[in-house]
Image 1 (cartoon, rainbow, N blue to C red):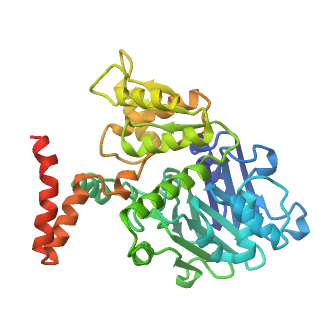
Image 2 (cartoon, rainbow, N blue to C red; image 1 turned 135 degrees about the vertical axis):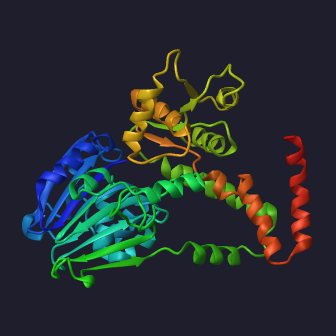
Length: 422
């Protein structure tokens, strides 16, 4: 996790310095602010994961020679397939001076332009300046894992990994519609035009934004949004390609994909750990990681002797896999008030449950242990429709399609689990 920030158009260092200070926890290893063009300022907070040397500091240019510089980037995230992309680019004649993924991303854009985005396997948000074209590009990963906020007033365009500093500079007020939606659906989630502050926009996942510095930023055609990833289309293509496969073949494919996914996420020049919940998602990842990586540290919120927590399940997993398990609790006299406000400060937005406060405690211990990379099972239940709400959605879809036989059959499969909870 790093922090990016920038100002385009009528620029000033003061707001960016404030934002970089606020984002320091995102990247405490190095901080830089650079005017890369009369109309462009880029800033960066670095958390060093790959290539820990100063050569991979950002903002990064595509050349150390001033006369040859064309592209500059400020980037947050990790491109998991950077080694494969690097080998491909080297075969095309590209020369690298670092061993990290930032330069790979920079060279990939130099080679393929926005077409590079479809080649990336990773989570990312970045800003890239093209000096020759006089354009700035903002891009975000397929599912919007890494944040990217922006706002504009007049000829001042400001972007960052967090929205607080942008809101302060432009005097944006809290958005009560955002709060109301979160209370209604028990989910606080940013979308393109609805964020925690009025006027603060979010670049949608799977999209990139192009800003043309040759045009006045106040004109409507000075910025253009593009989508490079369509989830529904990809899902439909995948479903079609998997027709005719047996359950055994599909199961083997899932196991192979899980192993491959964990393996590329273990690429790091710093210690790697696992966030454990005791569920099937994080436990599966931990099992694979322990087989691929050897000694792995696991972190969980719970007590191995408290049956009300996930600690006993984690203890059982640790015994089976040989991982080093760390158990985090609230302590004898927890300062709930401080924890609440610390978590709100870190989120800069409301949250729906106290589980995120528990995560805050876990991550604080992870940092104390010197672990910078943490794998987890977030999204696993959504991917495999493990929550009851997804099962109900599937049932209602069968009813809407008037497939009453299919709906009844699926409802009967849910009956044993429902009766077990009565």
